[in-house]
Image (cartoon, rainbow, N blue to C red; front, side):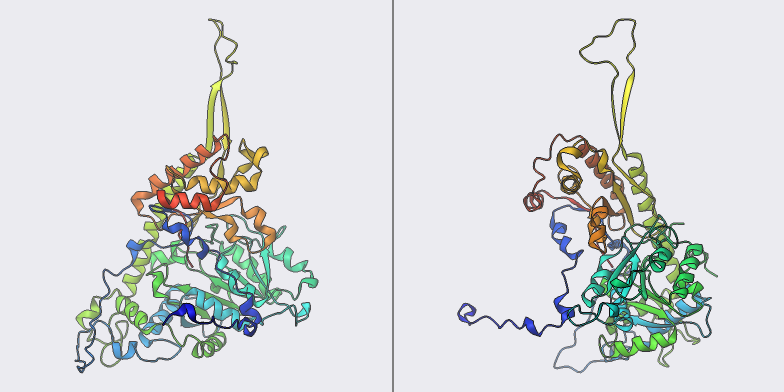
Length: 541
């Protein structure tokens, strides 16, 4: 068929819902084009390190269409169950493990009767999307009164995929000021200030909060227990649901000694049952699994289950079975898994990690990422100043033989940062006000030029522009002076060299006399794709 002779399909966009029409391209995905620059060094985002994926190979034996399947008592995965339709709760062996791990080890002291329930999801993004659908109503300015507009609170720098989930629904995005820990409870721009001085001309008082409290994305801060109590008290006072996204909970740099050392969740102070926590296996096993879980009070879990039944139905049965086989082993013939009471565990089940092995794995992940963080931050700390030495004497005025020249040190700080207390990122503020070319070009053009400069040889470093993490247009000017660096994705032995290249790139940029060759992003990109760079971006969810 010759397609060029056919008429194009009709434009049916007038049938799109108002929510669909407001959807925008992902901010993070728009940077993927830079990943194809040969040799790009990954410093900007959230990709976990591929060497930590706990599978050597994935294999499947394909059945011949003319043959009946044979029974293999030692098969790796129970295909009959895994590949069949299932319930929204997921495979029993996987659902049971998540429930046991959550209630007995991760959140053993949730302070309400009966404790929380859990529900498997297709990752934290899926869990967040379902929570938003459960707790919010779409708002359309052409149809609805402003008094009906709902709102969601978030940190003033935030993971943008979450914000891009709620924007099309017409929600009011309400940023709250942060410090090195995370969201502020009090003070200018803090949660109390925002809520107590709410302008109802903007819509209803926000009734939801989205927050990453451990290894905050992008800043790397970790909220203290004391701060959590203060924020939770305000949420009780103003009747706010807390959606706690916690993909980096096990990567805090600080029964199981490892678990006991971690800052607890908002669930630890959740007397009302107003916390909905999102967890994921993306950072602990592999992002491609698209598997996670929600923890919340049972009534909320029941509503989310009904939503799941008519949307995703359940996470991939094949993926659930693989993860269950890795952690808890095969189910026995009577349906008991490797964590159950059966005394007749198969040899295959005994080879699974079990709960002890799972916690050891998590502890090992933290150690590996913390080593990378320490290496990167040490080099950044050592290189944040540009020091230019010279003589106190004018070169045109020769010194007398008995006179001694004094050395003059010109010390300019190029950037500043706080050491992260968790997660995978370093949030770097560029001190663009110290650049000698500031008056000539202005801060916005200099920041853009620096980003392109760092991708050129010999530096070859791609960093995450701070504007990706500004939840509102009002914060774009502040956000543009930040870069997010990811230390997770690169091999441990490469962190030192790549970070030194980055620092060298900063020094060279502060010594530039002009911005020749850095004026056009597309032209620069076409040159870079032929040269090669290092990717400091590592996006993720």
